[in-house]
Structure formats: C-alpha cells, structure tokens
Image (cartoon, rainbow, N blue to C red; front, side):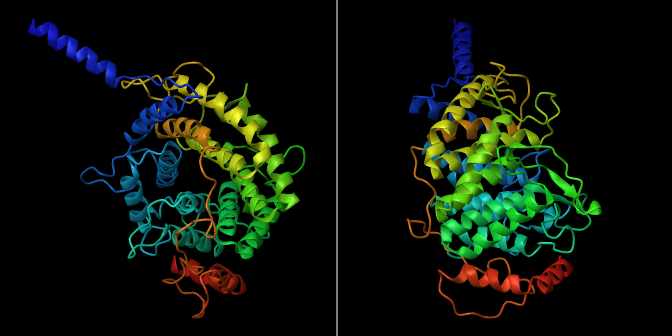
Length: 448
C-alpha cells in the first residue's frame, strides 16, 4: 500500500513539473500561465546567483551581450504580463553589470564586447526608463543615465576616418571584427538615439539618428523603397564597398522600430513611410505568417547568438504596433500566428515546456537554449502590446533621471563645466561631443 501511494504521489508531482505550454491567444490567463512556464525555463539558464558565479551572467555558452538581451525580455515579461516575480533579480543584474564607468563597458568583457553588445544592455535600461521600472537607489546610476551613457560612449566612437563614418563592430582593437562595420552596431545607435529623442524631447538625438541612417543608406547597408532591407555589414578594407547581404530579423527590427519612435515623436512623413516600408519588407521573415530566421533556420545552421534574434524582432514588432497605430492590426495578426506556433514548439525537454527554434513544425524540434526561450517568451508577451501603455516620456510620466554628459565624466574629454537645466543636459553633452569629436575619439581610444 505504501508503495502504491508513493508511486501515485510521484506520478502526480511529475505531471505538475512536466507541464506543457497550452496557449489560447485570446485568453489573458492562458497567456499568463504559458509565459510563466517559459520565463521559468529561461531563468533555468541563469547561474548568477550561484556561489562563485557572476551576477547578471547566464551559463555557458551565452555571451555577455545575450544576457543584456535576456534581461530586456524579463523586463518585458514584468511589464506585459504584470508579474513581478523576477524584478529584484532583473534590477540587480542591470545595476551590477554597469562597469566602473557606469557605461556598460565592464573590463572583464574586454575580450568579447563590441558596440552591439554594449547597445543591448543600453536598450534594456532604456526600456526600464520608458516603463518606470523600479528605480535604482539614489547612490546608483539611474536607467536614463545608463542609456545616455551607452549612447554617448558609442557616439564618441563614430569613425569618420574609414568608409566616411559609421561604427566599427568592435570596441577594442584586438578583437576580431574591428575592421568590420556592421548594421547591428550602427542600427542600435540609430535606435537608441530615436528612443532618447522621444523620451527627452531633445532634437539633437534626432540629428544623430538621421546621421546614422543616412550613413547606413549611403554605404548600402540599408535599401529604401518597396523593399527596405537591412544588410549585415561591410569591411573597412574595401571602404565598405563589399556589403555582406545577409539579412537578420533583429537588424530589420532595430531600423523599423527606431523609425517608428521618430515618427511618433516628430510626425514626419519620412519616418512614417520608412516604418511602413521596413515592416512591409519584413515579409521575408515569415512562413505562413509565422516568424523565422530566414538566413539560417531552414538549413539548421543558426549559431547560439542567432537563435535569439527572433526575440528582439518580436519586441520591436510590439513597439512599432504601439507607436504607429495604422500598423497595429497587421502586426498583431503576425504576432498571433507566431505565438501559436511558438507555443506548440514549447513542449520539449524534461520539464515539458522547453521551446524549440522551429515554430511552424507543430511540435518541439529538439533544439533548446536561452535564445529559444527568449524568442518564444517575447512573441507571446508582445500579444499584449496594445493593452499596455505605450513607452513613457519625461513629459508623460517617466520618472527616470539622466544626464546629457553621462558616461563621459570619468574619461578624458573636452567637456567644460556647464550650468544647464535638466531638459537641456542631453543637448549640451552631445553638442559638445560633436564639436570635439576628433579630439575626443583619439583620447578615448588611448584610454581604452
């Protein structure tokens, strides 16, 4: 009798633990239950709270940049699902990894960190500012400050000496890829500038966004018109004339959502048209309305990084739907189809809710990892993008405090002491940086 009772208890417990994802996209409770399972699975890859491990970092083989992406997804989880289970962990990670200069260039990442890597942490704290995520203590850098610090330090690396401008892929000269100018680094600078412009109301950020966009278009990293595509990058060796025409979802999303922010702020028909063109051209990333990574998924060659790209594109779809209402119904229809497909893929692993990469298979495909969990989580939780408030600004309820010179205070620059208002600080910091860009750039490289 004891054996039977024990077996029954174990069986019931196993059913509870190995709970598959069952999603009804029209039912909030179903969506909350499904995303809670996937978020729990995502956090299985986090070992930053274990003895001897680093706060904010996920287990091997996930690089530092993807950790920044993952915390952005968990912040989205709190916001869209209205679930604060992981908020303390998210906040701890975002503050801990800021680095000595509070700009997300921690010295222990100098062998791997590129401009794009830094940017993904900047995007996470930008979202924290836009959503009034619990502010750090007064002694710690605030979310807006951190986003501005990322922007400023990236802008100071603008390299006019090769290809007529643009950011290099890498920050440090010794890292492979230093001679490559890629769309994700430049697209992220454009995207962050657009969000800072809308949040602060400062047109100097608009100027920077236009500068980056025009450069990317000029060298052929962006095409405009009926097919508005974003290509991977180009080599400095050939003056950026040999554009690598691989297309990734997250590059397309950075330019699409950045354009949406600028349209929402300025009302410019130019940015309105660009947003629509980037969205319409995104059709190449869908199979029967279900999102997939076209450059590698069909051939099963997506590497660890690439398996997370759909997460960011789903995030950018949600933001675009919030900021450009005429596109919202179309975007939601694609999110719905993709979320349903993703849920069907989240039936694997020992826990029964491990997610795969292929969302139109109708079942788990045997793939698993942090990227797969992030992508499934983001596409599902962004179904609520129209039911939650659009990103806040400093004039619509945003409380995070910043500084236009953020990220430059502890480094040698030509910035002079200025007595400026909070509303003008962003302009003063950036304008000063622009005036002395060549001197500042040389100095920063020597310091680094």
